[in-house]
Length: 185
Image 1 (cartoon, rainbow, N blue to C red):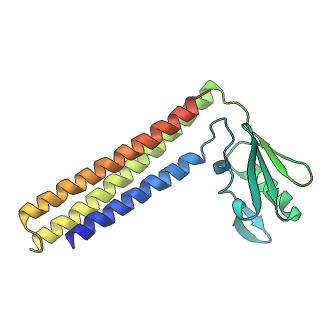
Image 2: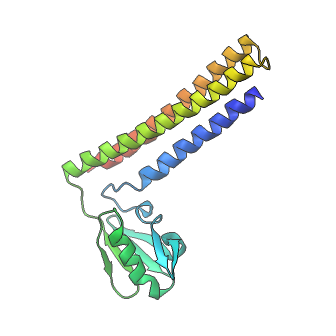
Image 3: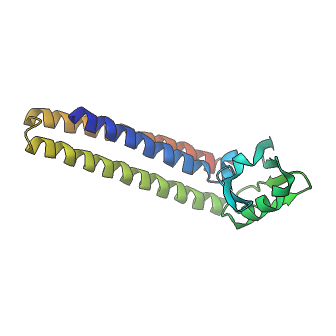
């Protein structure tokens, strides 16, 4: 039971790192990335559908994204969704595809994006620490109920802390890589 608590916490912490990594992928870095648009939801015949299910997304040049819908009637809906989104890009529709030109970032914009990266990293760290606290509470409860001895409880708490430290280090590594990518000219 006690090892299950730690393995469940480990899985949830790994999931928090994955979600943060996916969120950081949607931050614009001056280079084209499908992560900028693939999670956009398009109003397709009254249903909110992810863009990657409606169209092929490619990057023919380092500063351009091309979206080619499988149904041409979706072009207008894709254009509206991109304009309404917060990615800050203006779509160019030329009959069969939507082109997004990615402008180079200014120094001020790069620093704003780094602040966003740091904010998202801190949110992930807080989430991991909350998961640690919940798991530690469960372990202490098991100790109070007599299912786990005091020595074993201390060993389990140390193991939980090592797991937490490992995941926070992963958050720092992923965040530092994204920060470097944003600051790269």
